[in-house]
Amino acid sequence: MRRAFVLAAAVALASAAYAVGATHGNRPAKAAGQAQPDLWQLYTDVLKKARYIDLTHTVHPTSVVWKGFGFSKFEPAIDPETGQPYTYAKAGFEATRYTFATDQLGTQLDPPAHWAPEYPAIDELPATYAIRPLLVISIVPQVKKKADYKLTVADVKAWEKDHGRIPAGSVVMVRSDWSKKWTDDPQKAKALAADPKFPGVSLPALKFLHLRRHILFHGHEPLDTDNSPDLAGESWLMHHGYTQAEGVDNLDDVPQTGCLLSIGYPKFKGGLGGYARYVAICPPDSPHGAKTSSKDAPLRRFSKKLHWDTAKGFRVR
Image 1 (tube, one colour):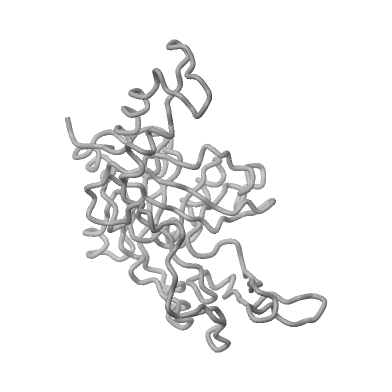
Image 2 (cartoon, helix red, strand yellow):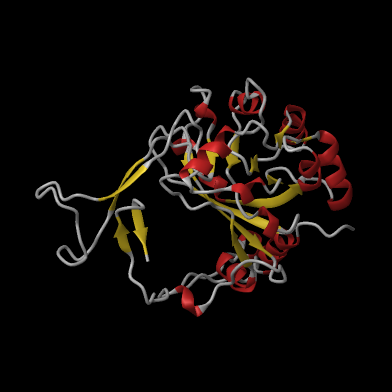
């Protein structure tokens, strides 16, 4: 049988292994017929040993964004009583005031209400989105030949021939390496956002993934699903109650199978876009990613202090 979904399988096996006789602190284990997986033990034996890969761009005032929205602005938070910014020296802390041009910025999670108000907004998505099996389908060779290549059904079926059937409820990330062009330089960011030739996902492929494989959602590196004049792919997704990930980073570090995806985003009331944080949780033998360690808390102390840079419009070290 082909090697597929190694970490996900390990989680399932660990759950079964610890389902009987588990204890939770001072609580006795349930009877054998009612036993539940010991998730703490599962974390110790599986997830603690995994590698964690951040798939998220850092949000920046001049991050790549659609020209219809424009750039955002970061400023020190102001004390309303004095009109002056909070400082470490006087207040003992600092904070930031963000003026976002849009909630469609950086690495995102698009809820269907972005296009279709009859479907959920970002705060109405279920908590069950938190963690899912992750797989990566690469179209890098095709994109090298054609910059605006779109994932096809044939590409998906070819991937399945090598790696096995895509499981229902999983997340499919489409790797194109477009994210390597990402920039915070304002002029380059504007040019990149205006470039009509970017890789995407075809509408037939989206329908196949959702209607035939029943995935949770797909993700891609550019800021649009495809470059069609009517954004056909995104329109179909939103108007049929599906979400999607956009502006995803570092997919070249993630194995095609065997990982899980941790999904997080701010819960803005009625929000039509999500500043998302995606983290791939991969097997211990993966060549990339960080492992948990004793250095996770307390965190490291930097030799240079964070301070506000007026020229750049954000804090730097």
